[in-house]
Image (cartoon, rainbow, N blue to C red; front, top):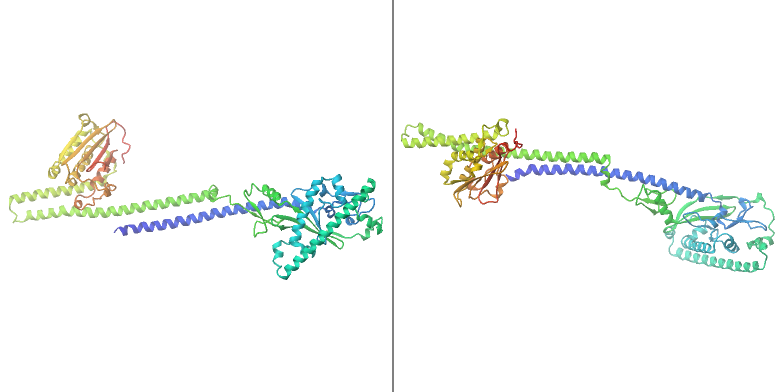
Length: 608
């Protein structure tokens, strides 16, 4: 039976959980999609903003003439002849890169066809003396030379063979994927030979610089200005013409700058420059940590906590440099609840939850109503069948001609009267319970004193007390006995009488054969307590003792009552603005009725 009662609740719980889980998952995905959409929109704006900022840097470097990558160049030379030998009497102009390094730039450099790396910030030979004498500090030149050597080491160790073949620089991992076995040995030998040649060339340049410096110390200062570059003497000996033949000038073409990584965290911009048949590579070694922080500062409002990683991803990659934006998921799902979509979903979740609760309440009420209906049918059938059987039996006996003994006839009449009275009480209780809450149930005539209702209840229950072998003990102060109740006398007497009747039914055996009736009054209310010293109310029945048609589960109590007395008593008490409660802290059964006194206050708690 219990399993059958649980089936509706199990089905309800499964359906409710399925609905709430589905709604919750759908709402979560909707909020997550909105969050992702906002993050994608913020990423697009951040990438556009960073690309715009980088474009300015890239445009400035792309517009730089190729001869700016030399520390000095002739001032009156044609654009196409800037890389030619210095002529006697020509005025040398320092490169802007010698005196001022742009922001986010470590070094400007140039790679010739032989793979030799030079920089306008680190001039060599006599040009270095001139630069340190008039334009830059020696410490700056030394620092730039150290940077040049560091970059040369990076480039030659990673991609020396690619530079020699005039192909774009590739990351080390790409080159490493094509080398192995004999190729690796050949590459190592070529790299060692290249470094040996480079070291020999550097030593020759240093020796030539010192020799020229010694000769220059013995010449006038005016002569030094025209013999700054050692190749000038050799060119003059070969008979360099005094004027430049513009028709024979080589064609100059500058390719676009492209960004690439030469090592982990080292970003360079490279371009190819063709001067006639000569091919040069010019580039900018960028200060990636500073550039990284600057770019992220540009988008701090759009992508707080974001990072830039080297390499190109499938999405959120910069267009100017090979770097990808990694967004920090700073917006959580909780942040989306304040959006219009979150408000709508919140209202929907609340409505769904209220609907689930309402359906649960309706199911509980329906289940309770079904149980009460079943208990009512069972109780009424039992309670009506017993007296009705007795009535029919004794009525048939009285109607029989053989039943002529006067004593038996009197006993039969008495039984008929008792059973008919029992039937009347059952019917009256059912009708009184049905009338609870009606407007006319709240009216009463005249004052109702505490002493009067106690006497009326004792008079009505005198026979039950005598049959149960119990005595009534009344404890009420004289002043309290005359206090008037704001209640109906018949209803109060019925409540107190019902409590006394229950004590007569259930108090046997008891430690003390007494029904104790006590009354107490304060300034606004009166409390009437009916107590016995019987076994009391079982703990498992205390929660439902006031439910309609509920009876105690003890076997010896199964045949007592309809299970409507306490429910009717509590209903009458509430209807008069009072309460009826069970006090389980004392031995036996103790019920306390609390009612308002006449003139104390309006009956706020009355219904209907």
